[in-house]
Length: 77
Image (cartoon, rainbow, N blue to C red; front, side, top):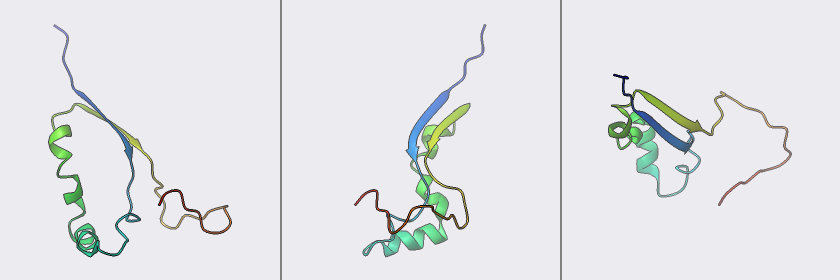
């Protein structure tokens, strides 16, 4: 008998505080600094039993990235 396994797919995931850094989100900013893993609490039950987890990660992993673009760039509002 072939071994069965579970694959979970997720997409369009990024890390950062751009969307939290707005007026009225002070509670979430504090939560981000004090309990960053709490933001994954709703996802954990979906992936904890998976053998494989494939994620479309759309973010930059750099301490102080530089840009070749001039001026302020806004992709969404």
